[in-house]
Image (cartoon, rainbow, N blue to C red; front, top):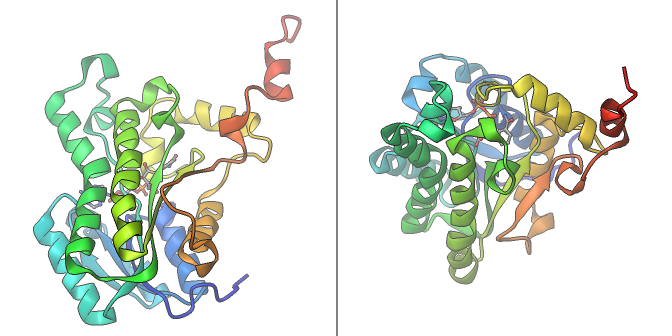
Amino acid sequence: MSYGLLKGKKGIIFGALDSNSIAWKVAERCHEEGAEFILTNAPVALRMGELNALAEKTNSEVIGADATSMEDLEKLFDAAIAKFGKIDFILHSIGMSVNVRKGKPYTDVNYDWLTKGWDISAVSFHRVMKMAWDKDCLNVGGSILALTYIAAQRVFPNYNDMADNKAYLESIARSFGYFWGKEKGVRVNTISQSPTPTTAGQGVKGFGGFINYAEKISPLGNATALDCADYCVVMFSDLTRKVTLQNLFHDGGYSNTGVSQEVIEKFEPDAE
Ligand code: NAI
């Protein structure tokens, strides 16, 4: 259903890779709600070619940018400004750990890979915000969002160095968000999403086990990518103008639940 919540709003959406991507669903929902935006991803991801279908569907332009390259980001923001003038929202939906990808355990990380993953998954959020800041291209009342995971606060052993990257990402949202609020009237928040079966999500060892576990713990069940897209729409809309510097849990209640009846029953000594 469309509510016209983003009518007239312009933005940039980072990180749609394929139709499972959270950013893909966000783009579809933003389009339904009346927004116009540029889709961007790393040049290597664009070579897969899937993004063109989304661009067509949402009547948007695709511009490649490696989010760790200030040069690429400058070209992207210049193109956005040329097209839209000022913009209203940015979604950072980017994550990658080389150690996770190559199966290196946390106790034996490769530090070059760690640094690369940290730059892609966390520092890139600072880079994106710095470029937008330097270009002064967000309207007052604008909204900047990044996606994160609860491994920033709690231990999930297989999440590896991504846990540290997410903690850093959330801290950047607060630190830069202060200045965005004070000087530009712009909100900066992170949404901490349930495990979601995407390319990045399924790269985590044991993903099948922990998505099912989260489903059983959460009173409302796991939030899907589409649910997340709906939340992003609300956070980009004018209905949340005083929400900033927050890490917003979007997880069916997982983060505040100790245990659920289903899980207790599974561990009853006389179960089986
Ligand atoms: P995805 O794999 O579809 O998206 C990750 C995106 O990051 C891809 O589009 C990829 O091309 C992009 N990317 C990687 N390196 C890049 C670079 N150098 N420059 C620009 N883009 C780059 O997976 P998903 O799950 O949609 O991930 C989106 C965000 O949601 C990530 O921040 C992820 O950590 C977060 N998240 C995912 C959860 C899950 O279980 N899938 C749970 C909570 C948060």
